[in-house]
Length: 217
Ligand code: AP5
Ligand code: ZN
Image 1 (tube, protein in one colour):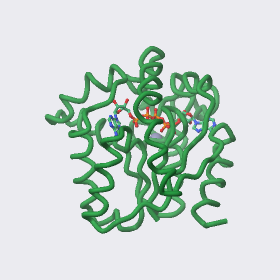
Image 2 (image 1 turned 60 degrees about the horizontal axis):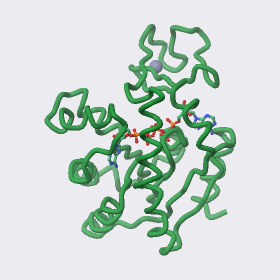
Image 3 (image 1 turned 45 degrees about the vertical axis):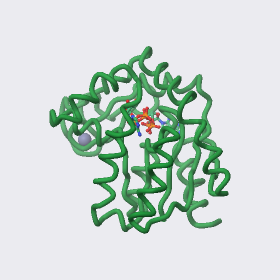
Image 4 (image 1 turned 135 degrees about the horizontal axis):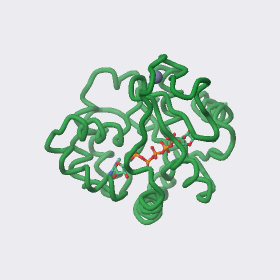
């Protein structure tokens, strides 16, 4: 099973993709994570991407499609994948068609997380994560039991925030989504593979709704 999770910044794509990865053994392919890894490693791609990401704009189609294409060549992808944050433009949707055809793969569903945009700024500006294990937290909705210690891996004082999670940048990211990403939905609607899930429901409910789609219930 190969799917795209589509939705604006903060809709819960990463949260749901990592649950599906744990529960179903599918592979999460987050272009945002791939770009952040390139920035952290100081590669040429990372150097080009950093300023664009910090401004909340989209990195060039060429760069992003290049890193995704390399990732799709790795053998674990055959277990089934969840695209989280790709495609984000019309050109990326078309490149994805070509990439999948060349690798003899197909898409089963595009799952749109439908959310109330007013809630997103709050969701994003309040989030932080453990630098060691990646566990996500939120200032109000999900605090660690002991404020300085990660519940999952026990790391102390390792919490970090994304540089693009400040309000002004989040608003830019939302504008980019509206202008460039939401318009790709009709392309997938025409194929009859779009399914919608209420992304404002509690995390476990959103997960159950996605599982039901994947199980054909
Ligand atoms: P990327 O990393 O993809 O970020 P994004 O799309 O802005 O998405 P987020 O990671 O912010 O949100 P999410 O939907 O994953 O939500 P999450 O699960 O974390 O991209 C970052 C940048 O990289 C882009 O701006 C761009 O520059 C570049 N980039 C990446 N891909 C690109 C591409 N293809 N082309 C060009 N440029 C690209 O949830 C958010 C918070 O809400 C968390 O705190 C979570 O705990 C909470 N939460 C989640 N679900 C719920 C719920 N149901 N109820 C309550 N709280 C919830
Ligand atoms: Zn941790």
